Length: 270
Image (cartoon, rainbow, N blue to C red; front, side):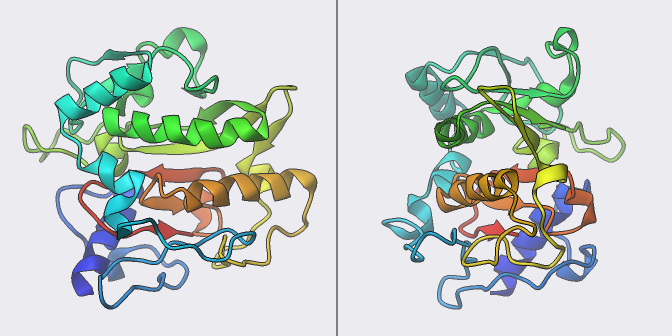
């Protein structure tokens, strides 16, 4: 169980920009909510489920049967083949420090556009638009969920954040943003032009539960209720190993941190 928590601590530390080259002590994480429940037998973390669901099993076959686990285990050739099978429009990036399979999306995923807050003209060169192939597959799954809510655009703060050159080992693969395996989604745009903005509409509280029978947003405006439903459907799908919201801590007040973590069998939703 200790090993599982070290892995979780490393993932959360990476989210906050700490080194992705090794695990950190759980005590080193900024103060936040209580830890999620850990299954003693497997060492995996129980994923929070949405309030409208009766706590289904993680997936047939356990954590290994989830999309997040499968994507995290893909090698470059297998991931590229999956992109082709799904006809995901992209261009390869020759190299990006810490990223195993860097690329840029060049089209929408299932009719949903993913892009950063920078101008359209700068997106083709912005480092923050680079993502790992495995994250691209997870976002394709995410698009299938949000399109059911008439969402056609997801605006993010960043996917890739280049690791510092100082002290970086050549050829090392990063985690979370350092490996272009995480997206910070801040705004969801619907077909009619209306928006669901995390900072404005989440209506949560630091330390509160997010899904799994949680009380829900307060006040429960229509935007807040729909945004929470979108988030919990994403969590239920097990596309990402780490899903952090404004309920986690103050630095996440304006976005959902959605992360694929390679080689782990646990999930965190807060």
